[in-house]
Length: 311
Image (tube, rainbow, N blue to C red):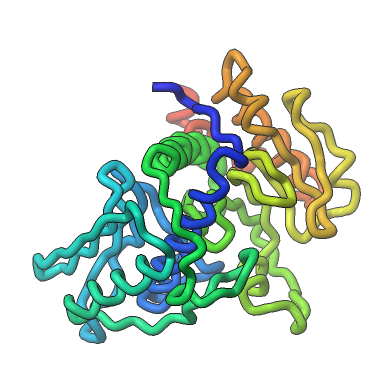
């Protein structure tokens, strides 16, 4: 099986737009039913051996303890309750409205009644999910390929994350932006303007160097690995990146380091190239923020100097 199969945005735009809204519906249920964590760490999905999971939520006597999974091998939505009950339905052939209604009917049948703001977040339209019959293309082949790429990227980012001993996020898949990321924290608190929206305020309340992967959008219609430092230090876009195909681009008034997925696919050692890219972008941010990268290094996930010297 190919490590990084082709995934041009134009080939699966309709399927992506449909599944992205499926994911936002389930993600909003996760947001409404989980315990609040710093930097919104409770919100994202995590990959499984068959798809994506919300992880367990609810419980503590407030509502049943339950979990919602996308099975992207069988192409079904599965709800498991921790008393042993389970219910599922097919994802194939559904519009967003059909998916929304069937999911909430399924949850209600299991005694679960979450309340969500049932409109898309930061997408091309704000049609309420229950009324959206336009987005109705679920392509099993393309959605399975998306999940297989996502799963490989998770392992790659997890390998990169191992080399940092400071505060770091899990490797997780954000359903609102449809990217997967891992974030390193410098330990410095940031004074965020009161005018900034609450989502951004919590996400960037500490100085970060974040790395990840997105599948492309209308503004940048190509999948790519990326990295950024926030708040952005002066001169970041002039720092060197590796390998030679990597570049700095302007995005929403800041700069992103990007390495395009299709360039990676053509490389002899794609895993090594991505790790080199992520490290070069991290080192750029670390230099300009004054982060002691050497002290916070944990090569291969090892912090013990004795073990380092004897492995």
